[in-house]
Every structure is written in structure tokens, then in C-alpha cells.
Image: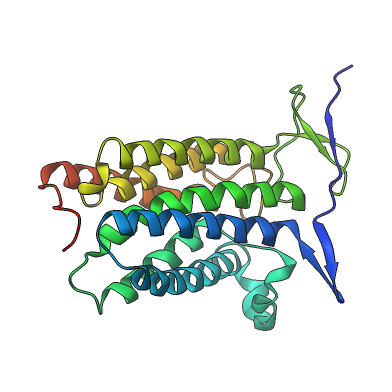
Length: 268
């Protein structure tokens, strides 16, 4: 008999007053904190001041949180949330979409960069791609603890039984994604610091879009259906449809980056 992983971790880390503090929030905050420290190091290396990083961080945090939430509400269950708009604000109930988070970051950085013409939009996004990959790895661990975004039933030896969902052994898709994201983060750091890929505008974000969303397209086949219109008879799921434009944009950005001259860094 196969011994599956019995998963029944409490999503609440501890109680603070009348509200429980969830592991998901702690992990998301940890990803942001480590990312902030790393981005500060990269900015200093390029001759930018800490004040610049602090202002950018405010834009990005707001953009990613709003994007994650609106992405889930509008892409995956629009009828419910448009009929109950107050529910959109109840982020503690769960429901975040990485595609929306990516769009939120892009919009936030665009708004930030409009007033800072000296530094290009792609320069900022290239470095944020590294941070986003790390944050994504922590978020998927949070999803695992929350017993959400579970995989389809399977009999593989490493299957998880999410006891707060049902008694079926399932693919731990959250773990698959988290491991991939941590490895990809390490690869991006290596390419940035050792191969100077950060000097080719658009190359890092291009690689990020192409690799991440190609992986997301494939991993969707191991996930349980997340919305009614994503039945097994559908050619593609929403997560896969949303991944295609990001992959195409990533390929174009990488081609463009190798055709252009390298940036001269650090900034004066």
C-alpha cells in the first residue's frame, strides 16, 4: 500500500486579537522583505539611491496586491464579484491570481517611471522579475498550507491527501511550482550577477515571461479545475489562455534585447 503524505497543516499561524494571522500572509511578507533587500543591493550596484528603491517599493506593493486580487475576481469568478463588489475587498478569504499580479506590477512600474525619464521602464522590470520569482515561490508554499489550488487525483508516491479538502491523494501542484520558482530564481540571480544579463534591457523580463508562463501553461494540466468554464472538455483553461500572451511577449523581448547595445552601468 502506498503511503501518501497526509496534509492537515493549520493555515493560521497564530491569533492576534480576534483575527488569525495566516501563514500565507507571513510568507508573502517574507518574500517582499527578502526581495526588497536584494533589489536595494542591485540598485546600489547600479549607482541608485535607497530613496529611489523605497519609493518604487511602495508602488510595486500596491500594484501587486491590487493586481493579485482583481486578477482572481475578474478572471476566475467575475459574475460573483461584480454582483458582490464588497467581497473583492475581503482579501483575507483567499483568492489571488498570479497573472493579475504580473499585470499589477507592470502598471505600477509604468506609473512610477513616467516621472523618472532617466531610467527606463524595462530596466526596472528586468530587476523586479528576479524579485517576483522569489515572492512567487513563497506564495505557492502559502497556497500549500491553505489547502488551495490543489492538484488532480493521482496515485504517485509523493501525492498529498489534503484532509481539509477531501480524502483523495492529489498532485501537490503548489509544491511543484514552489520548487520550480526557487530554482528559476537562483538561475536569474546567476545570470544577472555572473553573466551581466541585466545590461541588456528586456532580457531578464523576457526570460521571466517565457519560462514562467510556459511552465504555468504545462502545470495547469495537473491542477484541479478552478472555475466552472474550465471543465475538462474545454480546449484550454483560463490560466493557460492568460499565459500565452506573456510567453509571446517574453520571446519578443529576448530577441529585441540581443539586437540592442548593452546598458552602461552604474548610473552616474
